[in-house]
Length: 101
Image: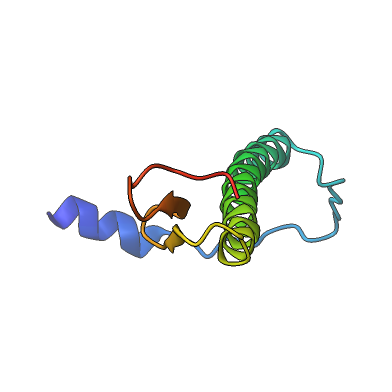
């Protein structure tokens, strides 16, 4: 212990030479790796966003078709036609079979 304490007491303050200026271009291996990871993340989220948008578009189209079908069913000349909101179909009151109004 005494030897270690003596070593610290003999240490002289060091001075750094500050007359050199180093300018990095920012193009290091780490920055290239970070850029590659950012691009991969962007591509993954873009793919996910595309899937979400496609799903939303399908749901919109489905609702749009159902809305048009409901209008046709309600305006049908067939008195036995009725709109079933759970299945989104136009059905015959007597048979329960789907109708094409």
